[in-house]
Figure 1 (cartoon, rainbow, N blue to C red):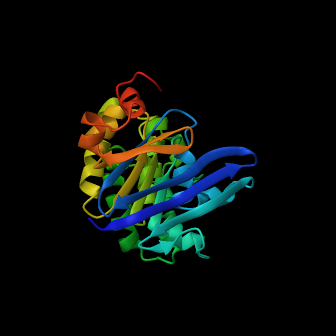
Figure 2 (figure 1 turned 120 degrees about the horizontal axis):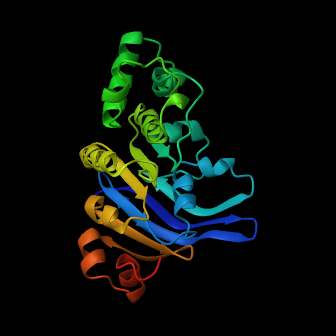
Length: 250
């Protein structure tokens, strides 16, 4: 498979605190890569670095590199274009203080799109993909912040999908969503990988097993093991990997 995203000796420090230490792995195009590991293993810092939202962390220092289609993400000058290509959904919803419709249309408008019919199509597509359309289609003018927590999380997902990113990063996307909706979104993600490369973090190892083509196991800021989902769950190379995936540590 063709590599879409690659980390090369990637390290992240916040002052004297090490979040990632020389992390290296490749993500094939049109696949789902699940990054798993205990709390404080560096999973969120990894995702933030992939689309350079790490830039907003004043104390963060990044060394090494991330390549998107073979081109450095770290040294590129156009972080806004990068974030259009690499979407990000954080674990807790961040709703903009505007209507549901305007939340989803915000990014396309910021890219210069003004045609109402085209925006309507984008908004409906993104809300359907995030399994939210049926619940909000008759009240698109409602403030997004008036939605429930789980709905706001899906609205955040719709906002990311509005730009049809090449890569979608999901940080614990199901943390505020009920199990039924989580399963529906998992079905959407499996469909999305036909056109999108997905990198997600999860503390739910069975979710990784259901969704992932590839699993990256982080522990203490370093990569312990990378492999396809069958090998990682059935034939892990390291005992530490087996213990984590079996729930013995975490």
